[in-house]
Length: 312
Image (cartoon, rainbow, N blue to C red; front, side, top):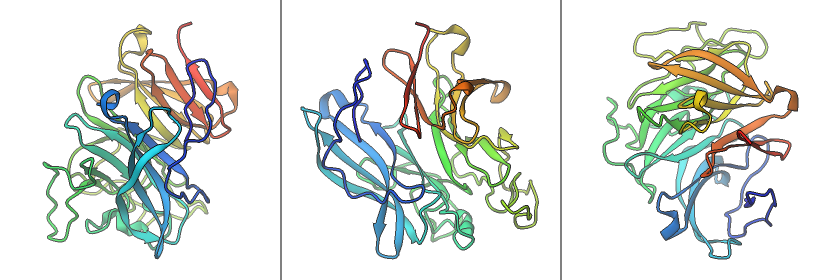
């Protein structure tokens, strides 16, 4: 974890972070700052952690020191159990909702054995969860029919969700997730809804075989608002707020990994009516994108570059 200045200087690594398993697709996965950061300096992040039985997607919090050199009193507040012997499909995005609670995405950990847990409401894999800043189930979470359902669940049936964002006008939650070979998804997330993985999918196995029954629809399971086939590997997402670039107002921007570009989607009445691909000539895997307090977009890549996208 580092801080980069607005003029592009990269700071030293911040200390005080719990030990991270950075193997495979692991690492520091997502981060958000408290809405009251100017007063409390609290930071929340998701990372891949070794525990007994394997690895988990873990949420932690701590206070950024006044010198911005260390995280003070860091503590783990949530683990997405069960652990898995995998270093893939952690999910790992985090953001605050309008009520001051945290929304966190978790992956189904990739393996054939763990895939079905996306459909199990007594497991936290392949889910969007909603928790308090203390890591407890948030008040007002949806109720699932199974008596053993985890109270932190918000939605189920996800594969590897790496993008979460709230629409600046409608306040709806939008999410992107990686499909297998084909079938990357953009979803409008409804509380208590089931997004189908691995029962329904527009993708196939990497080897070409069908997944499950090879179906794309089933009663009780949501359809994506939009999907890509061939895949673009959608990662972090953000909505463009304001009209500094007027034609971008309320558009959704998505970092594309295998596609090596930034996707701009135009949304009208919860439907995609246009797609543009930006920075495709940079040959970068765009991992995450956000809008700064200066209204510019900032995008970071797997190759270690940070891009500023603005009218200047």
